[in-house]
Image (cartoon, rainbow, N blue to C red):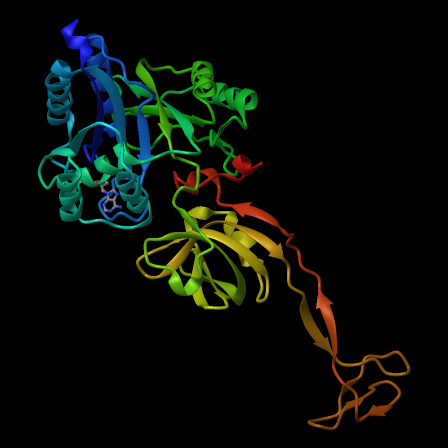
Length: 424
Ligand code: ATP
């Protein structure tokens, strides 16, 4: 009984264990949770997959960090830490140049300072030194492997307070299939989508009309299904037919698709590189294509202007962007890259501006007049009538774009970006 008297809440954070060649920190977390289950320890809630600043330079793919909480007798803490650290050492892709695992442990309640650190790890870019100092100042025990950059994300993953959340059910492959083409029954994915959308989302790339739940990397993930509740992602997972064995699956609670990266109502003059914003503006230069299929245009508010881009991977989204014209009023959601160009994730076209063409006036005889020469007014080519005072007439050019909310297709969506369907 003595053991259970002193129950401790242990927060565990893990990050930066994978590389483009393999592994996935969610899978490592899954293994660790299986090992803890073997000794009768279950996490207090779903493990958390926390997406951080999308512009972090050393990310492998989506800048995700993992955390979970266990409530255990004090005398089991070392055993749990041992299981976590042993498995990080065993499974991390240490050969990856940018794989620098970091693990943190923390007992007790998350402080306001810690949750602020986490928000700032989404809004800003930190250094390893800053994270290390933060851990030391806040009694967070940390373990660094190689450069140990992972502690930046691990601290954020244990510290973040989630308001809006979504869930992702990740199914894992058996080892012998790593690196091979994933064998899923596409029809079953479409059927699953028919039955569960919009409570699950991003299952299908509507544009390409193909299933979008499988990654295209050699990682252990067979597929991931995202949705609003743990129940719906699990049900959806059960509907997918796989022709290869599934090693196991795990449901994660996540800040994916919540727009947690977006800072609202920020003026253009205050926007910083690697920050993500939602702001009102007007188009100030018509969109133009550059080599590679990227579309650029400028927008301004009352404090400044910024270049915006819809890059090639955003596919048909660029067709809407190409239709924008100077004066259109927008609310843009997107992130500013290192070149101070804003990558658009979605936008509201709040007001379609009037565009005009300027025509010569009509003659009294009904014929369109011609210019009579510089400062000489107009002359009718049919009846010869002259009008020295005549002015060009503005005529509205019809626009083939409607006010509305537009977003990039599934395949081009950032993990953190909230799909329009979740606004409804
Ligand atoms: P995957 O999504 O496949 O798990 P990943 O894209 O999450 O991979 P990681 O391997 O986790 O990439 O690498 C991201 C690295 O960036 C980690 O070391 C993490 O600590 C660090 N990082 C996270 N947020 C920030 C930030 N705000 N500033 C600087 N570094 C960060």
